[in-house]
Amino acid sequence: MATILQSTINNDYNNSCYKYPPRLQTSKQKGWFKMGDETKSKKSYDNIVKYNSRLNNWSLIMNRFRKSDVFTDVTLCNTIRAHKCFLAAKSKYFEKLFTNESNKNKDKFDFPNISDDAMNIVVDFIYTNEINVDKNNAEEVLIAAGEIQIEELISYCQDICNKQIDKSKRLRSENIVSKNYKELYLFGGLSWSRKEGYITPPTEIYNLNESSRQNKEQYLTTIDNKRTLNRFGNALAKFGNTVYAIGGQNHDEILNTIESIEINSLTSFWKKSTANFCFNSKYLESVTIDDKVYLFGVNSNEYRNKNFHKMFYCLDLNSLTMNPLSSLPINLYTPLPVAVDKTIYVVGDDIDNSVQTSWIRKKSFCEEGSKFFRIDTRLKDWESLPSTEYRKFEGCMILFNNTLYCVGGGYPHTCEIFDIRGNRWKEMANSTSASYYSKLILLDGKIHKIGHSCFNEMYEPTIDEWIKTEKIRYPRFGFNITTI
Image (cartoon, rainbow, N blue to C red; front, side):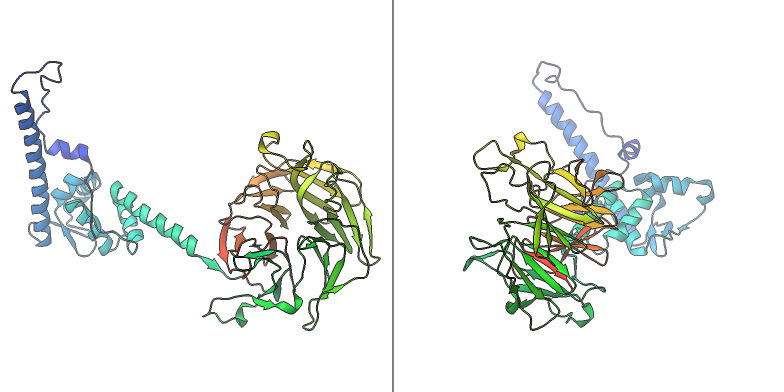
């Protein structure tokens, strides 16, 4: 459908060609009123309407001549016929083009970057003020309008193109695939449904080999009920083909045990170890360095102890022993640890111990951003680093190319990058979906965000953009992921 716009092309130039009658100042505008002034004002208005009508009639007549190829004296591109005088009167671009000394005797002008169809739409607009642009030709017409310098068309086409870009971004989706890994596992966690309430979701498995999928059908994860992990809020460690689930809880029961599974075996299932520990925590976080597991959140359920969130332990799965290490400088809620060689980086919100039930600080009592620390496991002391710009409790963090990517949390869409060499936080694109208790995993140079809702995303560092990926069947939190 043609869109009618009031033409504003070179109004200053039009005014020099068509002199409107001067506006009359009525006696009323001078501060006093006389009979008959209303009649004079109405006549002045009628005269302006008549001149506008004549101008429109002239455009209609010239367009009719153009359509019939009457009095036309110039060809644009290959086949577009028009009138030099009319184009020059309506467009400074054409005025300069036609009055240029080298062009005075030319009656055909080529535009290598403009197609006949796009030029025809531009000329139609100049003659009729109608815009015949839609999503199918907006980009092509934008090129033509830009070269001929018609601001109304440029603006209109840009709006359509921007909407198409936004729509394509919203609809764009990528598969969760990898050339280096075979499968991605989602273990444990807590899920919720309207029918069943809170449930322990089954293990979900992504096939990362794209060539083995049926591309015509929407991909869904494989459900493996036999290898369901009945705990959430636990830590996870992988050594070779063995995966260990450490601590956490099952419903209201705090678990002080460890379970393991041989992930490559199709007949394997989770087995509990005979050893018992004092994890005493509903939510553990961990990092693995060499053959050791470093745990955060141990003893975090001793609410009467004001230092309950400072605890930092080393778990040796070979000897099944757990030893305390240097405590964190402050209490951290849901710490997010990442290992970089022998160094551990951890970010989290500080705990408010001023009330009977300790909890994260309110915004009015805490500076924006979350505390950030690191420790060399060969040394004893924690080092304070620059805080994040936004609060990151219940967020997630991962290492890639000597850079830490911190996603979601207190401000669930915000994301930040920590440059380890530069020792500073930098901006990155915000995620399109909220991130609470989500997990990050690196697959072939791309960062995949899994959970907590059914909607997953992939961050492409080279273009600083989040792209939707395949869904999971069960929204979950307090879960873990690993690959084989």
